[in-house]
Length: 330
Image 1: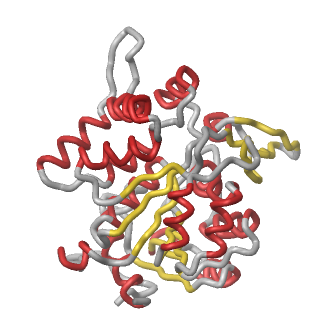
Image 2: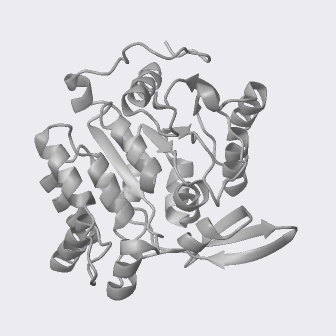
């Protein structure tokens, strides 16, 4: 059972292979390292897993490819595919290959192999989802990876510093500009959602938000109108996995409950069923429970962090808790 103050230690219960082959239809939303952590756990729980990934990155290898070729930024999509690789020799090897970055004094410096592979397939096939599906088959990925929109997006943030509110544009700028992010929007304002992503959300049993960079990876999904309508209208249950630490430059000094307050401000009519938080990050249980209740959710507190004290979710612990939550509603 999951307890609000569960102790650490002990072997995590994980579903067997038969359960993984079926399992609930789960859609995980996000991008970057947060989505990587979520998918690393969820692939142990269900064989029917879809990642819907933000496409607003404008930095590093992704930003360079986006500017030069006009493509969707591939980096977060690549990371999601790598997270879905198996733990056998094949999966580990290919995960390392697609994540590998070239080091040189030339044009290839900093580019990730997986980014180039994805973009090459996009050019050959002429379709973003078909290209990602081909990479997924190559990697033996346990699930499907989809972009949340059909075009590259820019994030626009309202940032407050010393009482002055300014507007910044671009994911990198949103993350690095000093001050407190108040809200985010997208350019274009009405981007076309990827139809496969909308269908996956509508057909899901569970939709999982977070963990991840709150303003640049999690909330943007709620700003794609057609995807937002699907998230509001789906019969799926909705779960929020809270971060283990504030995101520097985005949510400095945010409490866990403030993350939920911001989510409610960006989507006031969107209800949740479960909010999952790690035992060690909850410093005001009553305030967090109240914030969860404002979203219509019950609060689950469990040990899901890595045992080394770093602000990382442990995939096996997180998988065990998610599996129990999903089982309670089957």
